[in-house]
Image (cartoon, rainbow, N blue to C red):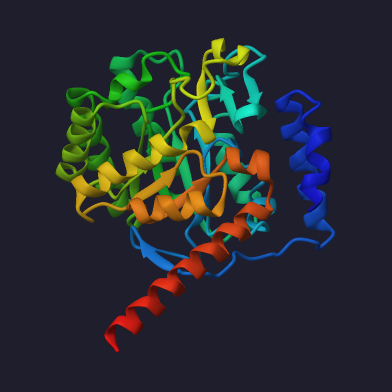
Length: 350
């Protein structure tokens, strides 16, 4: 309700200013005690060895530096993912670099992994009171040559390991030059082999096993998805996140903003991301959990992702257009949908 009143004012501002003001408002509301302080408990599930109170998570990108964990936790999410964070701080691409597409309930961004660096992110986590499931999304610095990218990911994994519930390896942003080439078979095989070895070494060092997921693009052909699925199973990766933003402009071709470079998120991505989830589900056969993200703008979209094979889902652009109420709406809808399935099974058994 509150966000519906605030959104027209926010949309008059440039997106990055609106982002800062929104977080400031949420922080103040939380301090006044007007937000719930814990996750909504609805259809809890154990995924990647972690107990999720509900399947609705925050996607990486909204809180790149882990500066707002307590405020975000108060919105009822079952888990949070922060980042993408790189070994060294970097400013990202020049502004303007975010473009709303309200006619299509979409956003184009070309932020380029703007963040304060992994050391600052860790300090922010230490200052937080958040005790829930925390994913940390890692990437490479823009000026690290692609052939040395594995070193950046290894550094990121080493530094965030003890602070993360799980770690996401982001090889699918379209806004860091050539990054998506790491999804190619040979490059991915080498990257996953190196990081899996590092993960096992860190597990021994820290006395705990932290799951590792890989985030992939929606702009993949069927044979590429098959190759990725094969490598995920070969290296016993703990999860896959499908998907990142798209470079396609299908659905907004007629709009002037379509000429802007960057990744498109929101409603135009909904169907494509769900197709990728379904393809992965068919290929992985339950061997590796799937986190579905991309164009979840309503409870129906979330239920569709789960029915396509996602074990968990994440939100980003839907929050920009719908606000925090979307978290509770989806969590309760998932519960209701599960209850209907249980009732149907009980009836059939009679």
